[in-house]
Figure 1 (cartoon, helix red, strand yellow):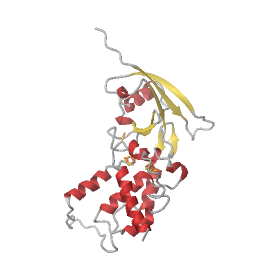
Figure 2 (tube, protein in one colour; figure 1 turned 180 degrees about the horizontal axis):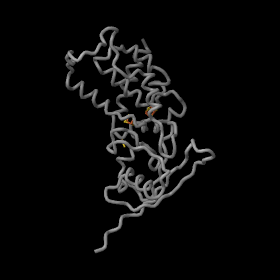
Figure 3 (cartoon, rainbow, N blue to C red; figure 1 turned 30 degrees about the vertical axis):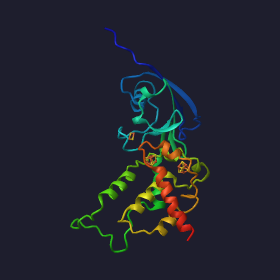
Figure 4 (cartoon, rainbow, N blue to C red; figure 1 turned 60 degrees about the horizontal axis):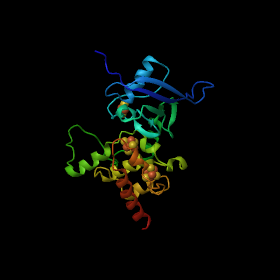
Length: 247
Ligand code: SF4
Ligand code: SF4
Ligand code: FES
């Protein structure tokens, strides 16, 4: 009995390694047979294993959790490990996410951008001096379950950078914190353990690199693979910041 053959996929990849002298950006196309349940992670590994072992791309968890496999798939920021080829036309184009430092081919340094943003926005719980000691004997503070669910919802961000790559403002403002940054401030402002005031948050995102630079076109929410409520969180933060600005 003959086996049913899968579709032949043509995967065109933008190849360029800034660390290789005289390397030039170019599209290279690879043909592979689609297998049942194939994701782009599987397809790229197949290409690297059987056709071109110099191809660079990043994956860690293969489950949409680490955020390291983000790339442009047919022009849209996407987590490649969650992208089923069966949902795509057989001609697929892949390119690295813009904005982030290019390591080579599809591999980008989102970590550098994210750690810069996290440091600038101080995305950690702030306690008054003297209250921040950690002790294993101390009981965890109780939190209202609905509030903790609300915070958890925003904490699902995997720092993949898709919202940053899908944002028009970032092209004009290098230091724009993006939806990912505003989502984090929304998250900390909800958290009763963070003792920063609204004025403190205003100092962090109450300018053109924060809420007042956002054009509300919502490319970020459309691009977020974790379906975070970025639209409502940006609107919430903007309302809060506008009320402080008018004071
Ligand atoms: S709404 Fe538009 S400008 Fe604002 S963060 Fe999202 S993509 Fe960027
Ligand atoms: S908000 Fe969504 S798109 Fe942006 S970094 Fe977090 S998970 Fe990725
Ligand atoms: S490999 Fe971790 S999110 Fe895709």
